Image (cartoon, rainbow over all chains, first blue to last red; front, side, top):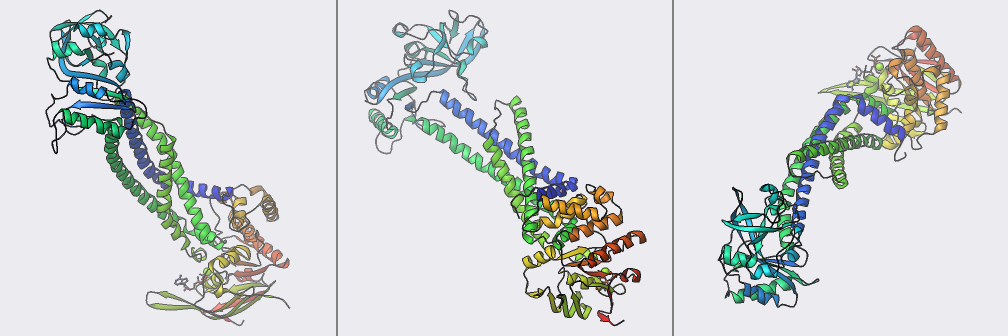
Amino acid sequence: MKLLNLNFLKDIVRELFSNKGNLFFMVLALVISLTALNTIYSLGESAKRQVLEALANLQFGKDALLIIAGGGRIIGLTTTRTDTLKLEDVEEIKRLSFVKLASSWSRGILEVSYQGEAEKLRVDGVDLNYSLANNWYTSSGRFFNQQDMESLAKVCVVGADLPKKFKIKNPIGEKIKIRGEYFEIIGVLEPKTFFGHFRADERVLIPFTTAQRRVFNKDYIDAVKLLFYPDTDMKMATQTIRQILRKRHNLYGVQPDDFRLITPEMSIQRFTEASRTINIFLLAISLISLIISGVIIMNLMYANIEEKAPIIALRIALGATSKILIKHYLTMCLLIALLSGVIGWFLSIILMQAISLFTPLKPLFSWVTFLISLAFATITCVVFGLIPALKATQIEPSILLKSL
Amino acid sequence: MVKKLVLLQNIVKTYQTGNIEHQVLKGINLEVKEGDFLAIMGVSGSGKTTLLNIIGLLDKPTSGTYIFDGQDVSKLNSKEIAFIRNKKIGFIFQAFHLIPWATTLENVLLPLLYRKEGFTKEDEKEAVKLLERLGLIDKIHAKPSELSGGQQQRVAIARALINKPKLLLADEPTGNLDTQSSSEVMKIFKELNQEGLTIILVTHDPEIAKNAKEIKIIVDGVFVEK
Ligand SMILES: Nc1ncnc2c1ncn2[C@@H]1O[C@H](COP(=O)(O)OP(=O)(O)OP(=O)(O)O)[C@@H](O)[C@H]1O
Ligand SMILES: [Mg+2]
């Protein structure tokens, strides 16, 4: 017997369609769980991609390190003092041979207003290396220069969405109020598409010196972004910097760090850890729904085989072996899987389009998802179809002559 | 010497229903040679169908020896039995048993699906020839539901013959047919027997039985002399 005989297949397809009600419910059961599986998986994947994109947008590059003042967990509240990170620390770190660039900044949430409209926004005091360190440049106007820094100029560079927010037509040269003082807009940043609540495009940047002495009145900094030369050993670099900071901050023994060192791997790792938990959860749900549809398929297949018992008996009387019968019914299960897989995938695409209308998640099309769901469908159908198929081989052919 | 195709020795078949044992066949002895045309008669419930099932390897005797075409059937495995059903025996049933979703031609070719070689265009031509001979040439692509009882039974005959079997078994083949169709079917049987096919026919109609070369009557589970 050939592996794929067209006449054999035709017979199976016709048998499958001979009871359309049965077929409909078998496919429906599988389609529901496959659609859910596809959609959930794709949305998760889409969210993950957007977060990773956002991380990439931070220009966190491969050879970069972020020092944040205050110790504690990477994500969470700080548990130590936050006023210990100083420019002198940065000076010493800058002297390390593998450090290419350092950019320090301080930040605050301040009231920003324009013509009577006020809003609390992120205001960052940044140095001249900011654009380079974050790969973030102005799209119009100019960035700060040495003179702005030296003169503690009251100028600012704003995020791409800020002019829109305050309905400023030609932002360059306009003046906005930051905590009651006028700042002239000298540049607008390129838009950065961020995910979630970063609202990067509503940010206001002011010169570092102005921030420290005129706005925040502080002598410590909040964060430093470091760029290393290519192929720097990240582990070694992190260790070295940690040691320098601990020594400078007089931290010994079990005293915790009063700063956090964040590498791109760590941020991605934290994210993937969180998403792994979610994935396991989703996988469990998917498995349960597949098992439920498998059981439904098994029962409907049983009913089908019971209904077709005289025909199966006939096949046996005409010389069909157990092997042929099992092949017959497993092929039928495969067809059901294929049909459901394709329908489920299409439905999930439609569903994702609909979801993307109401959420920031973009729909995602992936052949991998399709193949995975097809594989799941196939496994479900074969596993749960095997028992009914075995039952078909148990049918007594002698019922044929007596079934009158 | 003519070869023995079917040899039954002291065949007993007992059915168990709950605690009650019911012996249907009580020691059947039968010899069918190649080229024979045997009609088995008996009243309803006498065990005719049970016997035919055993001869056709659709059922197993409780005891006794059955030699089919020189092989002791009790020593065959399920694959070998399937092979004999497929290649050496053709079945015809009172209820026709055609596959409702398949056309005349597909129904006839069905046994070929279950043999190792599958089937080719040649086999298809052979099937068409057979259907032509049985007067079904214009019904080749019809479904069973579009055929009369007599036509359906002729499709079943073509299906039984497609693998060129040695033995044709028919259980009340005319039981669902009118007189006209019945005599047509019997005419075909006679022709086939003349061409050398061995036939065992079960019937309770003496007129039908007359077409056979030999008639045996089963009473209370054993053959009786006429
Ligand atoms: N599977 C079974 N289990 C129990 N008893 C059975 C079974 N099959 C047949 N019998 C019994 O065996 C006896 C013979 O049945 P069988 O079908 O061989 O009769 P028959 O001669 O073909 O009758 P008919 O002319 O009505 O077709 C009957 O009494 C029947 O009830
Ligand atoms: Mg009977």
